[in-house]
Length: 231
Image (cartoon, rainbow, N blue to C red; front, top):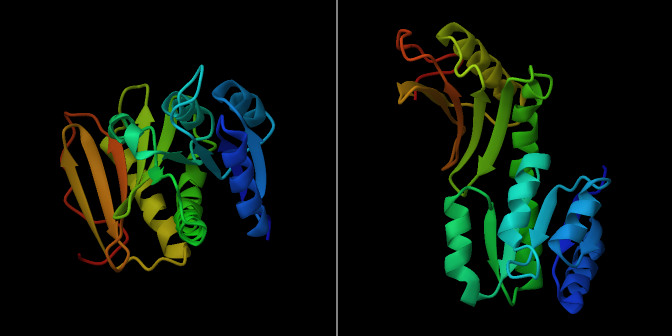
């Protein structure tokens, strides 16, 4: 199995090197950058599964860096690791949807490794769900995001919205990917609100998967649940 790739960004060399040693021992391929600009240079040739960055750095904050990462590497997990003094600023960035997680310094090595490996298992599922959109037309884009309770795949069009029939077709493919995955879909809910068609898949336990598509307002509201049993 190919090693997971991690980019560590911190302007304190001792912190960056400590994280590199920790995750190399766990079998990760790790690269280090000491500021946001250097990280962006690394990203031209290195495609990480995780970007773990300090928040307060000279020239470019961790939040600003992760906004760039979100556009260039949408499937990369984006994490801030910083002291509690930066918590309010970090929360503002989370509310903007630019950061996946916040990790407080100092960290516990074993807890941090376990935490990131759990996130990576979720990320592998999201990569499968994202795959059908890689070859989508240029006016179609997909964005993924995760929390402890849900994984969300949001699809956008510059057109500006899908016809309802096309949206339903995409949702059917989404449900089909889930059926082929290790996750067992035990139920689903299809609903329409605010110009969006949303399909929520129940996959057992507390976690749900959600696909959201913009649809044309004048089209009829769907009433069926595609490809899954009743919730």
